[in-house]
Image 1 (tube, each protein chain N blue to C red):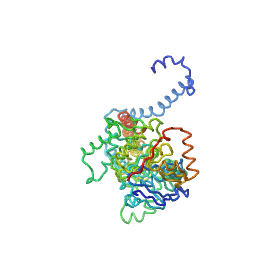
Image 2 (image 1 turned 60 degrees about the vertical axis):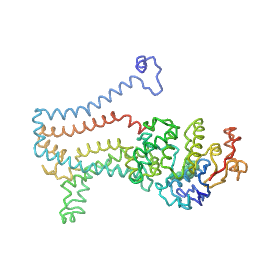
Image 3 (image 1 turned 90 degrees about the vertical axis):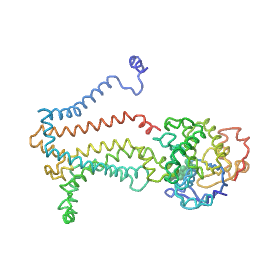
Image 4 (image 1 turned 180 degrees about the horizontal axis):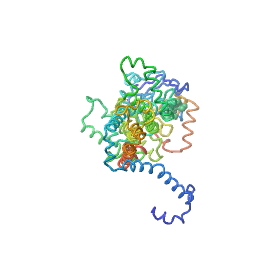
Length: 259
Length: 291
Ligand SMILES: Nc1ncnc2c1ncn2[C@@H]1O[C@H](COP(=O)(O)OP(=O)(O)O)[C@@H](O)[C@H]1O
Ligand SMILES: [Mg+2]
């Protein structure tokens, strides 16, 4: 197991947002953190990204004591729900940012950076838009820029917080497949936060279901669907399905976690 | 299309938020009257009085040694006070908008203090602290440091009065922008300093510039607080506003208005520069605010 999370706890003003969360995932795994709003998904993801600090617990990633690394040294690509693109920079500058802020010794040459930016623009299918500003793009395009920007630093881990939450249903579906495709191509260990069970079940190798700061169940989508560990899990994956009766879920084939 | 609509304005059904045409006309007329009476007219008067005896006379009273010394002192005081206020204003806004800490709302109230306290009072406070009879008086005398009735006192008083301008421009904007972009920068490996220089600062540069312009205009024009701490030594501790008052009290009206017109000019230039920047960088400013 490459990502091992042990008893992570976090309170906000005495309110327990995470009550001792533990799980592990293999290298290169696509893990979905699924749960209702307020269950602590974002908090857990931000702790993994170094943007929030755990009160108790440990995280080991590729045999590194992950939480002792400052955020800027983790090389964890973070994708925010509201994109968080640098608004005063062009798309190309946004993508290049992580490379340009490196210390002189580790910074690629200007030509090398330009080449990387072109490569990433084509990976996220935004060729030719490098000179635009974020405000000139659609939501779906912005989120693809955000992903390209996170990928530019060759992240050890990819963290996505409801990246498609602000997009309409059609774009969401397209981006979902495209994200999985990119994951398979790069093989980066990915943690994906969502409150949409369909999205989680369709995308992920492993799904961890959070409720009120605790993990209710972790397993492959097929396992969870076959044997929900609690009434909450059964209700949660069921109620969502009723809202959106989509045959895609039924014919989905379980993917084995690689690594 | 829009001209068509206005041409046939009378046939267009009135929208819920549209006022009665008469009400609109009256409001606009009132506004225009007010602006002419209270803003344009005084400004015109300043220049008219200054040029009453011709351009040469006005120029003479500006290049006269005491006037030159006042101009120099004003520029020096603003030149020190404004950069310091930019540094303090930026740090305060940064702390307030990007971090949560106890006493934050108290700090915000405190920043507004100079606006609510009479400048004369703030000047007196500095005299009380740094004056010869003040708290630090004996210490300062012993070490031969002069603050009151000297440049340091003038700079301190100016800084106090103009402190809110930069912070007030920045806090709402920076709060509105949140810390997402800074967090993104950090996770991409940027140090605190690089994040500030490459993300935070560019995002607020127009508000900052506007704050600096206002701060500078006010710093050069400050009268009350500076009047208390300066000591009014002609040719030494008189700033432009103080020099104007001295001239005016001496019945040297042309000279007083000639120097005053420099301050008025500063105000006009400030407005012009601001308008020019807003016009020239409209796209970029819109991109920063929209997003
Ligand atoms: N900065 C914060 N201050 C106070 N409470 C917070 C903060 N962040 C999150 N919380 C609380 O912690 C709980 C979990 O939040 P979050 O991790 O954002 O949930 P989710 O992402 O699953 O919706 C919520 O009840 C939320 O109100
Ligand atoms: Mg969340």
